[in-house]
Amino acid sequence: MKVLVVLLIALAVIYCKTPLPMEKKVYIRREHSLIKPYSSMSMDTPMWDYSGSTIVSNNEIRLTPDHQSKAGRVWNTIPLMSRNWEILMEFKVHGQGRTLYGDGFALWYSHERQLMAGPVFGAKNGFNGLGIFFDTYSNHNGEHSHGHPYISAVVHNGTQTYDHDSDGTHNELAGCQCSFRGQKHDTFVSIKYINNILTVHTDVRGKSKWTKCFEVKNVVLPVGYHLGLSASTGDLADNHDVKMLKLYEVDLVEGQTYNVDEALKLVPSAEGEPDRPHVHPKKTEKGSSVLWTIFYIFITLVIVFSAIGIGIIVWQKKQEDRRRKRFF
Ligand SMILES: *[C@@H]1O[C@H](CO)[C@@H](O)[C@H](O)[C@H]1NC(C)=O
Ligand SMILES: [Ca+2]
Image (cartoon, rainbow, N blue to C red; front, side):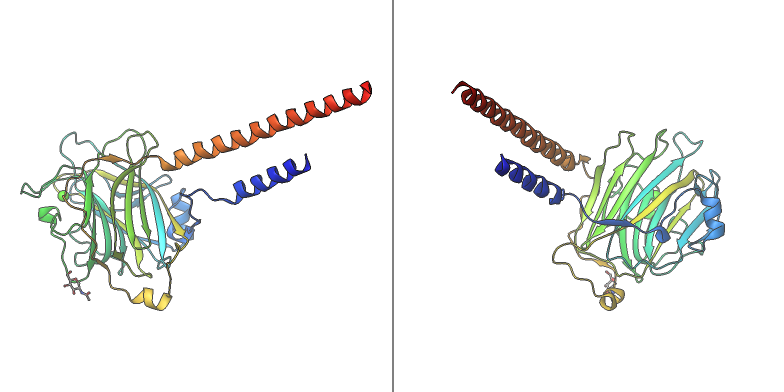
């Protein structure tokens, strides 16, 4: 019996100590996040600067209203020093237009805080860093055209210019079509930058399920850049609302090193295989974490039932022994 108890305790310890394979150590960084309520935050803390048409209300940051020729921006004042990170953002792009709307918004990790108006979703061209573009309007009918709305990633080192007239398809690193606009339910995006791998997932169908948009390897980004958001409207318009942005610092992965001085000097580049063709079949990511959870529940049940079974056998043996003792 004692052996069994020791075995069970040992199993319990192993079970508790074994992290889920999908699990990473993450820490929220509030100084890089946008969390409700906003009006008090914007007054109390100087962590985000606003410009252009941006209006901050209790529940959202409206980068542009549903009016023509607007552009708004929000930029984090504190440089991001995390080597690995994940952004979880809730947003809403909506408006009066049923078939005509635009132009979209962008999430930035850039060297400069681009608070001046510019042509790339309301921000400057020739930027240094990463741009994730949520494009709702197609102004291009060429051979590279793709469906809209469309999410894409661009990494620039300050020398290239983004060609918005061709929807940036010549610059893009990777992209996917995604119907994030005009949804009744909440729409989310997750952007991970871990060990130089950039991964974008979306959850826009109201089913609390992540769908992989794209993954690009060998994306080099320095630390010390600034997070930002921008949006613009043109002849066509939409409300571009950000409801929440949470930045999580993620632990270094095995074998990854982080030297601050070196990481500060890196030049943004993405030499990795561009994830082409431009239009990707939508792939639903297998819920591997769900599988692991089921696996763990199964193992737990096996252990519990074995323990009960063994307990019953031991108890019966004891009863039998006792009866025998009485008998003799
Ligand atoms: C910036 O990018 C351009 C185009 O990809 C490249 O030719 C250039 O060498 C890069 N500059 C630096 C400093 O890496
Ligand atoms: Ca466009």
